Amino acid sequence: MPTERKYREEIVRYGRMLHERCFVAAMDGNLSVRLNDNHILVTPTCLSKGAMRPADLVIVDGEGHRVSGRRNVTSEIGMHLLIYRMRPDVRAIVHAHPPTATGFAAAGIPLTEPLVCEVVMGLGCIPLARYGTPGTSELAQTLEPYVPHYDAILMSNHGVVTYGDTIEHAYMKMETVEHFAQISLVTHMLGRQQPLKPVDIEKLLLARTRYFGSKIAASMPLPPQSQKVS
Ligand SMILES: [Zn+2]
Image 1: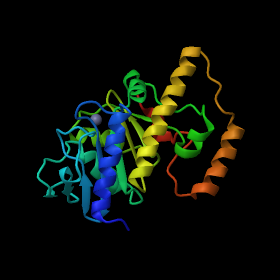
Image 2: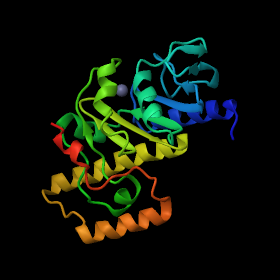
Image 3: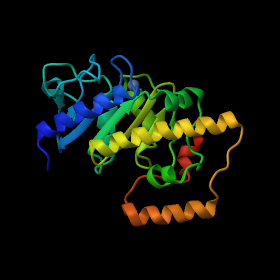
Image 4: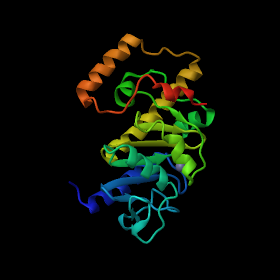
């Protein structure tokens, strides 16, 4: 089990990678790690994710109240708390605004077409949650129907959230979402999409169960309640 210091260093490292890849601008984005049942290590507000030091991070309790750290906690802490509450398997969360995936989220287009086998294997599909005002409970509510079924969600007119058993895996899912958004954009530019056939998707889902076990949340196709998104 890594120490708290190691988790702090990891958040700083992946925050810098978000910034270097232009997945965030200015003070955007936030990252967190679940330290134990009642403590979450999370990035502060009003600080570039490319310029954080380990001591800048904040520890909050299960209600989002700061228990350690000098800076103020991210205003998106409610989204992190909701995901940790709904998904006991999740240990880390990354939220960012990668430009292509966020473009899809601003165009109202989910990334749900099975176009690339690796994405079907790793994430299933990436649904689009309706818009919620940042920093309010409304934002967390918009994500609620999707959190149990997916490990990556587009947030309308806002950005993307991904999560996993480690901060590395949560970050990698963010890269996969943005890369898949770029590929999807190219298919839109070419004016043509050739989705995988249902029989091939079945085979990928079987292979995924073999690799990751049955616990992976990466639904394909969309569960019924997710199809009502407008
Ligand atoms: Zn945001």
